Image 1 (cartoon, rainbow, N blue to C red):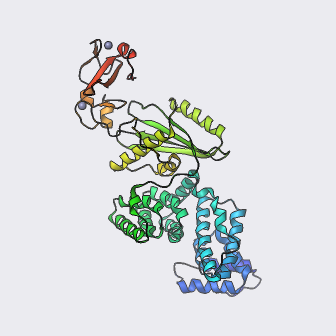
Image 2: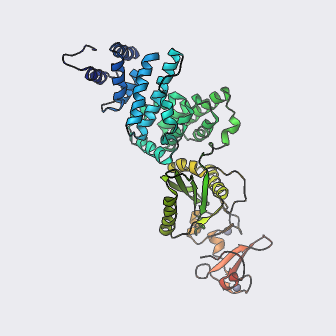
Image 3: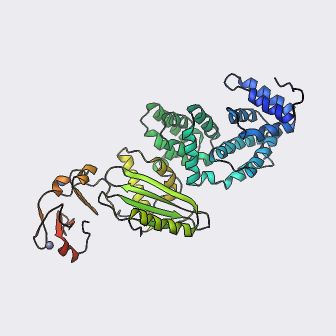
Length: 448
Ligand SMILES: [Zn+2]
Ligand SMILES: [Zn+2]
């Protein structure tokens, strides 16, 4: 089938051969035969093949990748040179970049393996500054594109990443897992054992908690493989590595009646490199309600976003120590995990921007509060039915509905109609209510 047709240019011939290849029916030998024929047509044909990697056509990328994977030594270097040009010349989408990255890695291994030397064009260098793997917005775009694919396309997109064992690609796998798609989980779990780095452990931990027993079995096997490769599972419950851009600011809103708070952390100062993430925490049930953020900003734009946020939410962002902001979010995540609540998919991206606390602190929030009087765990339903949450003091709906009187002046208080302050008694043993006038003379928080 590699006969040249009359009047056909080499480029068109390569194109046609790729089009005629059917990966469903072709054997490995068919694919390597075809690759060998293209190599026999010369460097120009191989370059044509590589240059056409993103040309439209059914399964085109997969076919080109399968053919390029057959190249060895110098031939691989020809293709690499072309891919290098593609990275430089085209504005690529996140999925295309991930694709190219893994393809280039494969070719580099092939080039180095045979020629015994590093290839002339180091495509990896193009990717070292690539925003795809370090920018949350890009990662989310990649994930959304992955989510929109059919199962077969998803497998094809993931296969080269999983095959690479390249630590730098782990952020993509983390994104893939955030989809909570059983088939994707299964594929990733089956391949994590190839990524010999402690950075893989948070992903293994994630998969060890999935409901599907086949996924968990794969995850346990991956853990074993990592341990055999010398990765200490001692780090299993340590979160992913800290982000490189320094944290610049931390903010929080005061908790609303249901205890929800917005926590914001920003990073970076260089123009176009400023980013921020907001996490809405729910200390009563979900732990983390939702998360969002933006990257690629300037400092002025960040200031605009902060004031927009305050306007839209009708809530002031109060500056807090970034370590405190990080500690609250980390505790919220731990709480969600302990409660077996799924983490919002976008949180998985934005928690990279939030980062982990360096120091343990006394948290200003109680996660999983219990009623200060009867001891039952407070539910969201309690709060809806008149339960109270004020700082570290919580009352269930039943206890909150009991008749109360001001601890200072003795005036009787109605939980629905009167404004009052609730706090722990100075001896810490029980809860006190203060009417508004008395509370104004006391330090503490009034119920709004
Ligand atoms: Zn109670
Ligand atoms: Zn009073």
